[in-house]
Amino acid sequence: MKNYLKKIKRSTFWKFFLLYLIKPIYDFLWIYIINFHAKIIFIFYSFKKREYFNLSKRNQLVVKNDDRITNIANELNQVCTKEFLDKSREEMQAKNINNLELFERLDDHLKEKIINFASSDIIVNTVAKYLRVFPVLSRIYFYHNIPNLNNEKEINAQKWHKDGMGYKGLDFFISITDIALDNGPLFFLKKNNPLGAFSRIENALINPARGERNKISNEEFSKVYDESEIGDMVGSKGTCVIVDSYNCYHKGGYLKKGDRVMLRIAFDTIDSAVLNFDEDMYKSNKVFYYNKRHINEVKNFYLKFLHYKRSSIMKFFKLPQKFLKFYQILHFKIN
Picture (cartoon, rainbow, N blue to C red):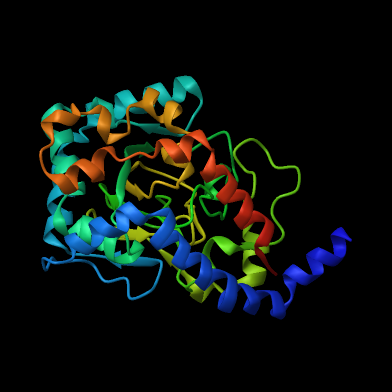
């Protein structure tokens, strides 16, 4: 019976059943029921014309030579002095790791600039237009990566994957240092995935190591997608990849030499598992924006939702966990 169900979920019939029946119905429910509050706010927010980066129904976009993004990248690049990076590198080597999150080590003025950039009209409107509901600013990371001398192969997030923590979201990956192929750029699938969370590449790693569950090897990925369908983040500092990491397959590049410093700004909706079950873990790392200020200091209605909105109903009934299980049960097996 199990093998029979797997066979059905590989079939063209199942793909079109999800694409033309289940997904349209669920899209409606997700926008107008699950995210009803966010939809109402989005309608009011849309009354005023604002700039945005147009993803044109895609789940990824590369932005280069945008002054607003370049300016924040240049300011962060100035922080990355030899002393700053050497101290971070020594800590990683002592812990035998190859990446470190450094947002809390930035001074308050610079953190405030990043938060203001993440809350700017062009960023928020880009996310809102893509999601079709008003978003929540969930995470801000400032990553420093170095080569992992103990591993000669790609590990963990350096393997193909989707971040299976929600139905839709949007991340901004911004390079703070120049990135070439040997600096481990982000790679992403350029081909749009119309089934989104309702699809998975079938042959994930067998007996995966910690951090590699549901990851896809390069060999398996190349059986499904051509090299021409893969994009990368190679470029000078200020290069930005906007990607729905819940729907678009992506991976971190294997860093062979030098340092890679990157800013990541992530947006979610209230049904995301990140805003519910992982919240205590992220609180300890202080990457959630609402830890940066007291809520009473934020007077703007839209910013208050953007920075602080959580759903007690979602958390109490563990609905995000149930939603993820629903996507998993129904997903189309890509092979």
